[in-house]
Length: 488
Image (cartoon, rainbow, N blue to C red; front, side, top):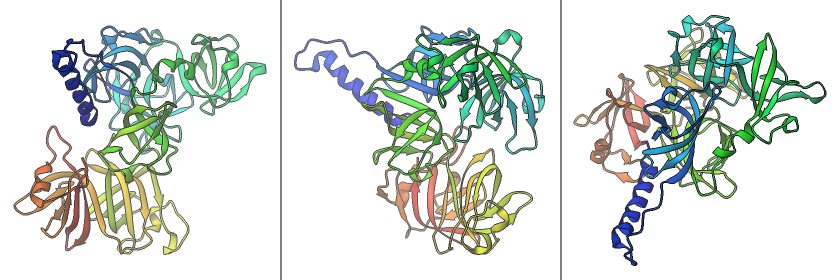
């Protein structure tokens, strides 16, 4: 995961080591420079604190958490912001860690029939998926309206909170809490709204951090309030202004920064967009893992590594897609509207409540969001999505204007047969790779078929399988490849 960053740090360490061993021109044996400062934010995994692939030692870190949890109590699925140091991009030392749960309160309603499942707390809609970690509760089915929970997660461009951790908590586990964008600010009566439906009364609230005050409030700024939620009225005892709180995590120009979240404001690559409140800029030199530049889109979850420029824009050296990007392009051979499925290249695709559907009603112009406007064995589609277990979940299904484009597959290899020159995807979709096809490595360099197979490894107990992209044509139940490229 960290190959690019690790290569940079290792090269730096080697150079420093040569100097410190007397290999430099002055022969002084100077002490190597300290590990590089960096900032990182996203969903952590327990094991020290594993954040965006780096194992940070939190033993000496300042832990900022309104529940007073220690470093040992930080756990998998929590969203944190971290400032620390690393000299190799693999291990590091944390200096400060802020715990960033989005909401703590009583569940107002549960929608178990939605797909994916969701519930509402403090006006915030929480989406639950296969990546959600549950604590003090067995799972989604055990949640009920009235259950008090603390939820960590990342928000998409529509404001939905994709839960990374849901913990059932009691009254002793801190006051009610909610984060969001200030709306309908009425300073004369000390009120504003959060999440569209929650009225915050801040007349008796203290403002934090130092330097914050009522004058800091403005429509559109992000705040965190603590206090008591009663129905749709939140009586705040504390209002925390996020922009001021985040100053320690802004980073300095030239520093390494990592951020995890959903893309918003995307238009074109190379270009700029936002990830979890950070402005990101891609360039022609940006390296992609688990997908390609063409997979960049709003509401796609990514991890971005890069360096801050003079304006503190994160210039991306590497973007990793948090879910391997699936692409299937070809003739829709079956459409089941009630089941919300479409078959492409023999693979069944599942659409859910979050899938964006762009169909061409009656085969003409315009735009439809209904699968009913995609006709089996007539219309060709471009499907972008991800794997949820063994199911391909579509994030976008777009009907193509014509069917004369090459069929395409981008997916993880589940089996390979070099002797037979075939790859298998989804355990059932078989592609042949004739010697006449063209082959490329992950850097788009031309290679031989043998070299291509040497780079490809099927899925196993500890691997999702190599992500590859094939272009060609489907015929008689077999995908015949014209061009093959390794994507990670």
